[in-house]
Length: 281
Image (cartoon, rainbow, N blue to C red; front, side, top):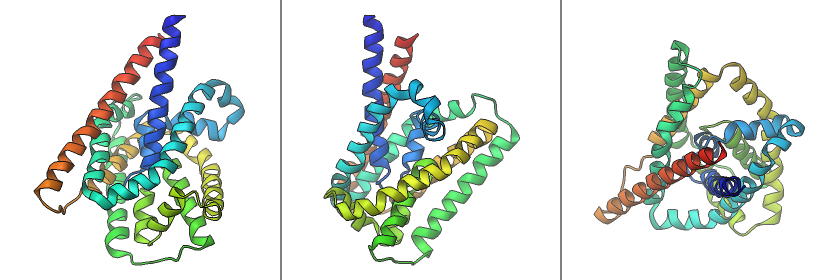
């Protein structure tokens, strides 16, 4: 019993921390909350909860509580912190998440090959990587559409957040920045602006509900192809957000330190996950 309780406590801690990072990742430019969910092996349980709640809830209720609390803490509490950190040093903040993602790529690659690798798997990896890289480059460098923060644009922001969770690799915040909506959304989330939340949250929930079954079907029928496609998305979206400009040697050094911290955190979460699975055996 003591061993089971220890395993349960570790799992709760791990799921809460992952929820915090997924929520924070949803609002950090260039990072997808869905990708982090995949990296932390939480994407498929989450999709099952959305598509078959009656069947999945008894199986995953212990996961849902700490993960949900962590996501809320990361999504709302980190909004102001992320905005402040980006103001201090966008490069260092971005490198922290790059380190986190790079540290989890090996486990993501192993998971993608659980059911074997075919030629279609590698084609999916390359095609998705190319499409995401080209799309994000187009949005950030070519597209010049700018929206005002009204009800409809906030509803669109909510839909984009939902897409970023259900469709791994979609860098929601990068799109919002290209549309001049990122700062208003961050301001609204950090102050818990009720009218803005009333516009954002329904769009997010509706998008997740409409697309969850499709994504769940894709993983059930074409696991290897879909998993390798996500791997390509993760690599491409990470490459796109690599900072190329620094204020000086100090910011470059701080970026290296932050990347190391992110990598160490990924290593800690991986080790915690392995200990949790060992305790459950």
